Structure formats: C-alpha cells, structure tokens
Amino acid sequence: MSTTPVSLAEYLDAEYSPDREYVDGEILERNVGKRPHSRVQSNFDRFLQNRYPNIYVWPEQRVRTSPTRIRIPDICVTLEDPESDTFEAAPLICVEILSPGDDMSRTIEKLEEYAAMGVTHTWLVDTRRRKAFSYVNGCLQEITTGELRAGEMFISLREVFDRL
Image (tube, rainbow, N blue to C red; front, side):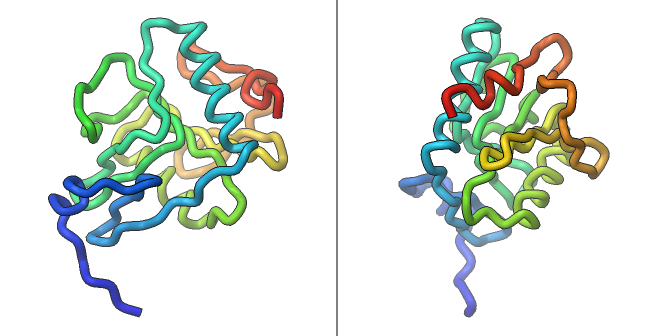
C-alpha cells in the first residue's frame, strides 16, 4: 500500500485528534493510551511539577527530532519554556509509556531519535510489568535503584506507578 507523501508545512498546519507524528513525509497514528498509560503520564506531570516548580513538564508535545521527523513523547521536560508549538531544541527528558499495541521496534526507533538529537535522559515505562528503563548508549537498561534520575531531579518508581 503506497501513501502520498505529506509536506512538513502541511503537517504543521493540520490539527489531529489525537495528535499524530510525522516521519519522512508520512503521518503516523499513535496508540492512544488506556487508563494505566494515562495514570502514569499524570503521575509524571504531578510529581515532577510539585517537586520541581522551575521546570516545565509537557505531556504529548511535538518535538522535532530531525529535519524530516516530528515525534510526540508521552512526557518531555525542559528547563525553560521553548515558546513554540513544535520544540526544536532537545528536551532534558523524554518519556515513552508503552501502550497495548505499541510496537517495540518503533518505540526503540523513537528512543534512538531522542538520543541522537541530544536528549540527555530518555526513559521507557512499561505499565503492564511496572518496570522502567533508561535508554543509554543504544541500550535499554532496567531501573533497579527504585527511581528515575536526571541529575538532581528524580521520580521514584513508586510515584510513577502510584494508584495504578
């Protein structure tokens, strides 16, 4: 099945509900998370915002990972407000939360893009197994310390999975 490529300008002018990613001229649907996904996403927002009032926590924000790709991490964190609808600079943190139906190969591809654009901390959260991973040097490393850390910032896995 062939698709007609869409220009980046056309993608940026359009509105999608839920929002979609742009990859090399194709508009890709994202799996919409169910309750566990939504709860974990909310927990990241709540706990990080409450603990670190000087950071910015962005759920489902467009991030340009390359000239021809725009991804939408489930959560991203910046130290300042980029004041743009599509972030061009690398966030400090990008979080992907697995949803039923997510393809692991495509998820890893996103993590690679975040790392390549300079995201310092890239995390993958598996709500079904209640595990979290850090993507470092091309490898997923399970978090065994009980908390996800970004320098002095942290969120405990207990907080990540709170009320799940």
